[in-house]
Length: 65
Image (cartoon, rainbow, N blue to C red; front, side, top):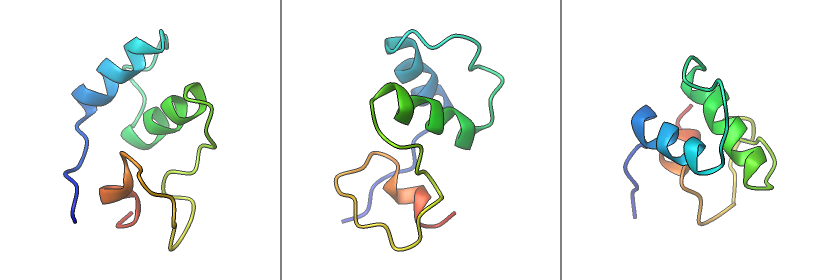
């Protein structure tokens, strides 16, 4: 099952849900890390090879990065 990549616009909407400030100028990877931390998770995006975490919103592009 393949997931679609998450757009930066979608990430900014999610960041707003967590009231994250100053994230508009972050690169996509850094923005994902900020969201992961706000969710109470490790900032693992593109840092773990062969990740087995599922479900994960970012998996489609994380494991190709």
